[in-house]
Image (cartoon, rainbow, N blue to C red; front, top):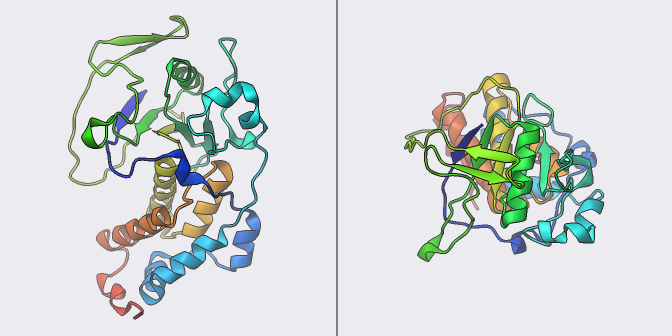
Length: 286
């Protein structure tokens, strides 16, 4: 398993940020009467309508929460970092071993070309959830674990506990020594630009942030759309957000996340030469 830390201390998440949700039913897409847009159509619409168009699209994704019985089970309450970030029964990752309970706050989410291509997981926050997290990893065999948070924030405030061995040749044991996690090497690489990380194994990509929702959901949506952009020259922002939100509670709940993804799509379309820079010159005046 490759473990990649994407360190960003700002905008740290809290449970209070996901108070209104969330899932996007198929009806929201059917009512939109929109086909998946080409990059040029997408950029043109953003240029003409500005932020108001994104607000409209964001509002189209309405509430229709599915069952959350496992989340509401009293015995699982201590396993949830935030008490108001739900976990949908239909997409939750069940741990099917004989080493403990089957519950961890993590969901399967479809990627661009694979069902259950991602696992969106909350970060472990105590000894029990650390063990459960590594049980999940042992079972699902993710090809990559991406941590979308720093361990400390402003004024050295601790945001996450270090739940992996972070020095080469070190190891940590979980579940009474049944699971051993070893660190083979530690490399610090400064990336000047985004790059694709490809592995040959077929396991999912495991995305981890404090809640497993805000940063993880934004990352998944953007990754799916960039893959579609490269392969089909289509965007599908509204459709992609709707699908991800149906599988993981609270993703892209806040308009700032939605707006951030839209801006990244426009930048990628222009920087890659798919769309000419001149097409953004006709922005709608307020």
